[in-house]
Length: 224
Image (cartoon, rainbow, N blue to C red; front, side, top):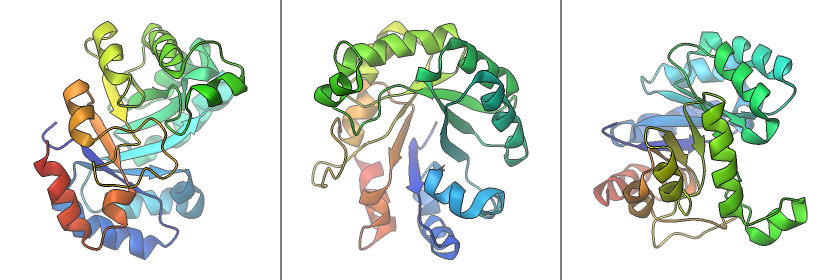
């Protein structure tokens, strides 16, 4: 992949979202559309962004019983997403059914531990071990289920790639060294994530909320 940067777009205004993507499209590799965007604009919104000619990453984090997740995956076939997320915590059967129901050209990746969680959050949820431990365990389960890869923080991607050599690894919560962390607790810089083995870098606010989004995207790409 020549440009691993996927811009996270969750603007409630479709015209603003389209304008932002148009502004930076020459310096990103794709567009990540999450729950906020999908709930606001649905299939129509995805089609409008897709008209700009970049791969679409639908970050829907599907998590339900296997039959429901498979049906949801079939319902988004027409959108032809390059990447779709499901939750690894849904279990092996759910992941297997999701992958079987996905389009032939869609990568299905499993969310392991959200980058907004640290070890204390993980313990309070009821998981044993650290966030790192749980990412490795869930990555192994996703691999066994036949998925294309996982979503994890840049702090774990190196260890996961060591055990899953040909996996596809999406790293969100990426922040340039000078950026504010916000609600991200396990963040790394774009270069650190890429060097550790990230396939895709999901970057939102450092580009979308910059005074000059196009220059911000250029600057991040220059560090890679």
